[in-house]
Length: 555
Image 1: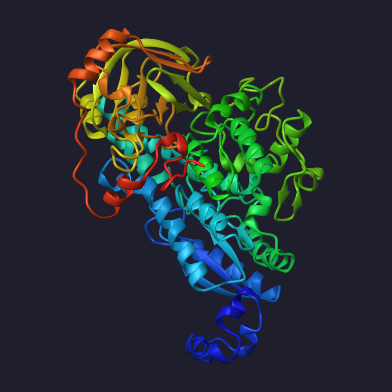
Image 2: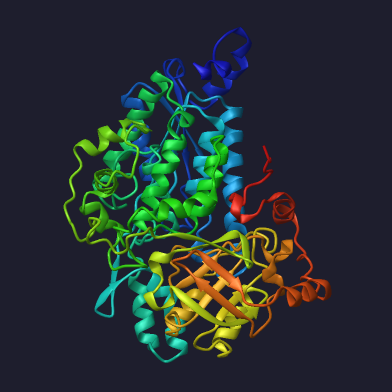
């Protein structure tokens, strides 16, 4: 066993003495030692119950003959960190999580790992760590939150973020807003729609690293506890058979994940995390190829914020196995791809689509193409990403004047002051991986636009990124970013911006001579003064089109 490196032999007498200090019996040490990476904390609603999940996982490990050893991982609540300096740290936390798990799992050579994440950057950070350490591993997430009820209708976090814009414009009273505060997030779990957390929890299952149901079973459902126990038992099978994450996350898995991503209309953040995951798996990820997949995969599941269904509805409709069965019926996935419990052919053999409105067939799809698109043009020669499944039909093609802001704060202030009018293309720059630094989410501005009723007439273009809660013509990840000399730095108020999502184009309609003149005469904004982790992050981070990873090698 790998763990023998720290527990067996004459030279390990002091090590065993330290294990005795921890209360381990010799019988426990004779069994495989399984690290249980638990991100429980008291600041993330999606994580506040993960101690319960961890106890169930550890019970499963013990039942299957292993010895669990729990250790923590940090986590940032993107919702609470939103719209202030806290968001600078959200995406960088992904790298810290991966690094810290690598340190713990290699400093203490466990035989296997069970990962217990639930929200935003914690999930991809742990997937990256699993691939980097590459010992038998399985994921057991905390599950999605249920939606709430306020003002006589079903509400979730989307409604809370859009409420300020509605209040500012007189479209909502403070009493109505307070009702949303009280009831939109009714308990534990990752927020109820197809936001980044649930997109990535679904991805653990779609990539084959989690058991069926891991992406969709509600946090409060007893089936989540049963799943955790089964995950604890299953990791022992993986240890026995020496099945490692890189055996599962192959090109086939990435392809299947992208196909399902398009069918589900996941968060744009998947276009940051999947390249980073592929990198850790030693695989190539071609952002140019995303559109080819999107063009052939229909958008068959539309969850909040794009639609009126939620993760619980997807779970009740048959979950991700049912989605994959539907995609297989269309000849779109590779069912030979491996999972922690067999192949996708095995999983979908017994899958049943229980609600045809939630999981639609091709004929009744919301769109014959996928929920995400990558746009290219002079404004984004290395790509920009849009959740086209959440864009209103009238905004799929749009030409409008630029209204430029050099930070999220400036944009938010400008919106409240009425500086943005119908038809504008809002530019928010210097918010990329290096420019932020940290590539903040622009949920505040997009939610304000929606709350003001401008999401049907205005677009927002940024080198930052978006929360999965964002909807509308929200185009992010513009690469190269403004801080790296991208054309976004040279856009001026009134410039015409052309957006053509069906044809994957975004262009600054300014002639080349004028662009050259601006580049010769305009000095981009100097780097912000930062210290500590953000300073190190800025020095090492790659462009968004590479997944904003650290230390990218051009090999």
